[in-house]
Each structure stands twice: as C-alpha cells, then as structure tokens.
Image (cartoon, rainbow, N blue to C red; front, side, top):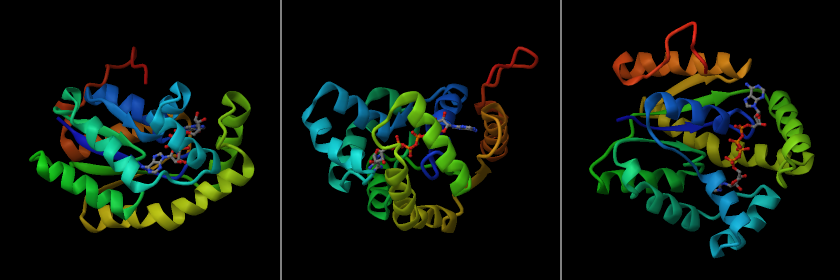
Length: 205
Ligand code: B4P
C-alpha cells in the first residue's frame, strides 16, 4: 500500500526504474509522459493539445496535467497505492497533489529523487534519440528540458526535502545496480514486508 513518486531530471532513469519498483511494490506506475505520448499517438484532443509542448520540451500547462492525474488516481487500481513517475514537476502540481490526496483521505509516503550529472543525462538522451527517435530528444530540446528542470522542478525536490519526505538515490551506474540501490533505500524507509523481491540467484531486476 505504498504511495510514492519518483522525481529527477530528464534521463535520470525515472521511467526505467519506475516500472521495476512498481512491480516489486505491486502498485501501478503512472507516468505522465507516457500518458501524454499515448494520447499524441491516438490523436485525442488531449494529445493534440500536449504535442506542441512535448515537441518543444516545455511542460504541459498545470491545468491540463493536474486534471489528467486526478482522473488517473481515481481509478480503482490506484486505490491501494501508486508510483507517480514525472509528477509533480511544478510547485502548483505539488499543491494539487496534496489536495487530491487529502480529498481521498490518503497521504504520500515519500518522494524518491534520482540524481545524475548533466553530461550523463545528455549522453543517455542522445542515445535514446538514436534508438527510439523521440521528438524531444534532440540536443537543443534536451538542454531546454534540463533548464526547465532546474527552474521548475528543483523547488519541488526542495519542498519534499523540507517535509522530510525525500529519499535521494544515485542514478549513475548499470540499471540493475541503480534498482538495487533504490529498493534497499525503500526497504529502509517502509520495511521489508512490503517489498516483493525475488530471491537470489534467480533474482532478475
Ligand atoms: P517524461 O516522459 O517524464 O520524460 P523524461 O523526463 O525524459 O524521463 P523518462 O522517464 O522518459 O526517461 P528516463 O529518465 O527513464 O516527460 C516527457 C515530457 O512530457 C516532458 O518534457 C513534458 O513535456 C511532459 N510532461 C511529463 N510530465 C509532466 C508534468 N508533470 N507536467 C508537465 N509536463 C509534463 O530514461 C532516459 C534514457 O536513459 C532511456 O533511454 C533509458 O534507457 C536510459 N537509462 C535509464 N537508466 C539508465 C542507466 N542506469 N544507465 C544508462 N542509461 C540509462
């Protein structure tokens, strides 16, 4: 019954790690970026609205994003816990999440921060550009996304830190090593009984 979010700059491994953590905690991973991209692909009204922001590396306006997350958190599968990936990214979104949870009589357990330096982030995103061809993984747009992270999302990290709700994990290294570090940090926070790690040597992170 864990309610958590993962926060970090573009390329820090949020999406990569969110899927794995959610599996171990048996909760749904909810990625705002994935929901926007699925809507773009399906040509929905939301997708048409979001596409221009995604392509430029801008944040989709708070009103649109908050309404989308509120709807998603009302679904049955999020009632027993969730992992938010990429939300909140602004202080306005932090206040909105607080209000959504308060209305539902719930509270966030913690925010997990993934860290990596700008050089590594750019290297990873340019590698993904070659493999996946995402429209926002060009060098100029990556630089803009990193700058927006500094301006808009670092205050969000500071906010959770000031509430003593932040767990900080080094995101540099092999994907499995980072997952191991994250799960150890979560286990220290919430206790081993809520973490469903397969036992070694069959452990497949
Ligand atoms: P996201 O989908 O969240 O994109 P992202 O920040 O680049 O992170 P992502 O999760 O995809 O990448 P990851 O770090 O896992 O957002 C995209 C856009 O959606 C935003 O720019 C914005 O326009 C919009 N949006 C989303 N949420 C919003 C919100 N709340 N408000 C407003 N707008 C919002 O991984 C990156 C790459 O690194 C991958 O290729 C991965 O394979 C690789 N990688 C991961 N871990 C690695 C490791 N340990 N070593 C080497 N490579 C690794």
